[in-house]
Length: 191
Image (cartoon, rainbow, N blue to C red):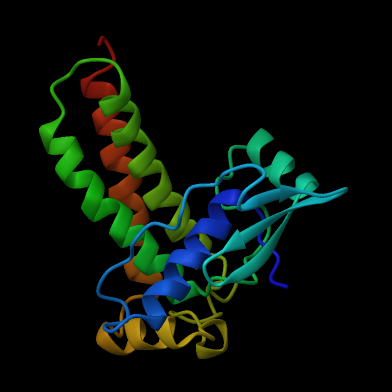
């Protein structure tokens, strides 16, 4: 049974696996079903079991709680479920969706502001997840090695965009997402 670091990661994994199985893999990343405690999310002694459309996934309580305390939506350490190219795609998807919400934001406090901030945070965190697979040091290489892209979804994404997981592209994406979030917060700090 697959093990996710957090509930968030479990849902992203399900969305990616569902997209892979669809008629046009990678074109649409639909959200995974919401968690319903007692229905598709079952409590066990040490972990939840998520009964997802693609099968059961384990989410250890300790991993979820540690990640939550540290503000790591996707989890601590490196993912064993989502590869580097998939993380880059997830980051771009969150950014694309957040741009529209950001542009439509009217400056009022509430859910709309929360969703814009969360969208930019998740986009940046997804790129950081991809960056965990970059070789260390300046002599380590300029791109994520192919061994860190183990899914067909990730391989297809990299084939469509050879620079998807290059150090320069990931650095640029991270700078853009974190910078846009900082600008948004500065612009609306009084609201």
